[in-house]
Image (cartoon, rainbow, N blue to C red; front, top):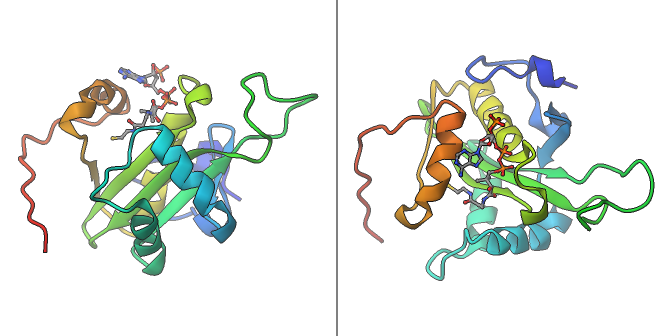
Length: 173
Ligand SMILES: CC(C)(COP(=O)(O)OP(=O)(O)OC[C@H]1O[C@@H](n2cnc3c(N)ncnc32)[C@H](O)[C@@H]1OP(=O)(O)O)[C@@H](O)C(=O)NCCC(=O)NCCS
């Protein structure tokens, strides 16, 4: 298993998410069937879902192919008693969806349980997604931030991301 120090964003190889990718004290793994409900609940709690995007379909699509995945990390076992923030032991506390087109990698659904935010888990989720992409040959990582969620731009800037001076255009089929 990789250790946190093994994880170098942008350096392909050495990272097998299926076996567990250790980042910042958490282990990220491919999501399991039994975790789908709590992951969707986390995304809803984090304000990431929209009526026109069914999160279950997004999740299933990302799991269906070889070029995308959903990684999750769980609350670590407390040394004694329950977690101070009330998080159940074993609950999913951080997620990231990653996918690539052979050149660029994309991150989606970067989410940390509200009670666990501000403690480095978001950074760990991004690093895990980056490592998954880099290991598959992606040469760049990028992501979209909804205009209404501009407050998180500072988080990504802290992690080395910069505005790509690109307008994203789209159209529904
Ligand atoms: C955005 C989110 C993933 C950040 O996770 P987090 O665990 O709170 O962030 P971290 O503690 O890992 O922060 C990493 C660094 O970014 C900084 N940071 C975090 N949020 C920030 C913000 N809004 N503005 C500026 N810096 C920020 C932290 O201070 C920390 O800096 P440091 O490493 O120098 O101490 C989390 O707040 C979240 O789940 N939000 C709701 C869902 C969401 O909006 N996701 C993004 C969709 S594009």
